[in-house]
Image (cartoon, rainbow, N blue to C red; front, side, top):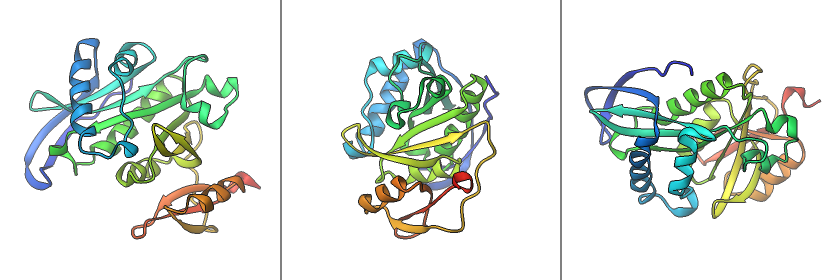
Length: 236
């Protein structure tokens, strides 16, 4: 696996703080209990429709079976984690949401569940976890990165789009509406098209029409919020 960068946390409880060192690594089976505990803490403060409620079995399967879990530690405790799914051809996968063919399913990785302890939000850890898992996916020979995110979960959506994933579909999943996002890791990050239009994030019908017409959702506006939709340069 690629090396996981270490760093310094400079914000605590939303305020500047003296630097605190953190480091990351792949977790083992004995640490799944810590992941589950953090998941429950985070999901208790988020509306159910905005965050998938994973089972204990989900985390156990991903720590050594059909994926990996990247953990970040500070002050000798787990403060954040990100799940990477490496499903087999017969396993459930976000590839199902895009109806990928067998050859592409074998190349697909799930950028799956993630949590950051409330105390340490604002340090860029969520985006770091996305970037690291993209590296892990590529190192595992998976060149298609897929994820899902609720439109209402603006911080997660913004970070996924910032790391080059783009909106490809809208689905009912995990008890609510989810964007399905994708990045092809063997290609350079595509350039956001200048031609396109902003669509309000709550206008799912207009977004679905844009996707049906070959458009892709690229980025969020700073206000609104709106999503920029346009056709990729190679769409013809």
